[in-house]
Amino acid sequence: MKGSIKLFDIFGISIRIHFTFFLLPILFGHFYGLRGVFLIIFVFCCVTFHELCHSLQARHFGVKVEQIVLLPIGGVAAMRSIPEKPSEEFKISIAGPLFNITFALVLFLPAYYLLGPENLFHPGIETWPKTFAYAFWINPILALFNLLPAFPMDGGRVLRSFLARRMEYGKATRIAVGFGHAFAVLFGFVGLISTPPNPILIIIAFFIFMAASQEGMQVDLRLTLRKFSVKDVLPEQFFSITLSAPLSEVLALTLHSHQEDFPVVEHGKIVGLLTRADVILTIHQFGVQKLVRDVMKKDFPVVQVNDPLIKAHKLMEEWRIKAVPVLNRERVVGIVSLEDISRVYLLMSGKK
Ligand SMILES: [Zn+2]
Image (cartoon, rainbow, N blue to C red; front, side):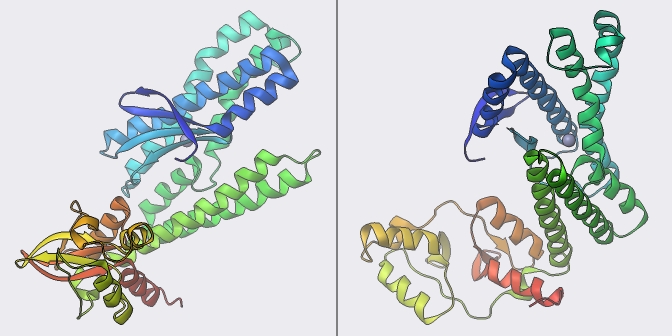
């Protein structure tokens, strides 16, 4: 994630912190002194362990987790994809809140005897015992908040996993997204009418709303693409280009056809992929005389003509490209683009 710095690696997962997170210790330190800074660092640790528990459970099911980014509004574990199997999604989602509940239970007796009920049940920030009491309540609060069925928060995922056992995955997701939207509106409303207004709650509401919509659409797209193979959407005509062609030739081809990315073919075999982004960047820097061989990607994915369409889409996401060359065994038979995929999606979902 942009604007974040790496703190350390643990179990092969990078723990990163977003620069905006540093605002919190500064703000709390300014208003509440050392006790404020202590509280923020304690929250930071609890959130990190919470995300780590999600991540380790996800990895157990074969999901790649590269990093955990801590933002002022909470942590985000960057997972490639959440398993569709309800039991696996349930275990991954519950792992985080379960850590907070367990930690709170372990801390309860020591906190009760060391701080006394007069402090434990009246947390504050005026004295150290009251601050420790505050710290104690952070874990139950984190657990409860995350377990609200506000999809895609943990509780929302738990909800979807329950629904998906009883109905089709797409329908379960749509219901969960509805819960996400409803909670987002509720959080936003509460944030606005609080005195003073609560900006963090408003930001969280905004994020939940966007994330719910986005995930709903992704699931919809995935389910639609599963019904097609690459050859169903492959344009009948395509252009390939040779290693020694200058970019001016590519530019002319782009203008005369609708194709923007080109397979580079030499002696009947594919040797490169020339993307529109690379062409534009090079023309701006070096002009149109540069040769294809100097600009093309030598490392790129390909799909077979009979592969499922979802595979092409996944590769585009992973490689951050907008088109993938299509082969029939060794022979190049076309190039499938993100546009081809969205055309099918829009047709199938009846949107324009
Ligand atoms: Zn969580």
